Image (cartoon, rainbow, N blue to C red):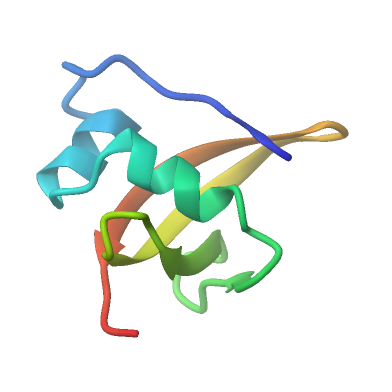
Length: 85
């Protein structure tokens, strides 16, 4: 299990806003990241971690995140967007 750091919902530079701009909720991001070991790799362009997975809403997401602490694992979800499976 990992912990996530979320910014303020009204911060236009924050992670909540970036996800919401793509139609993704915090709950959907958390559902995908709860299973981060299943399908996580490094982005070729940003070198950030990316995790792919389904939210209970049925959306297939790509969640981009940064590691804040390793033990216990604390992450900052940078953004998320819907992808084709």
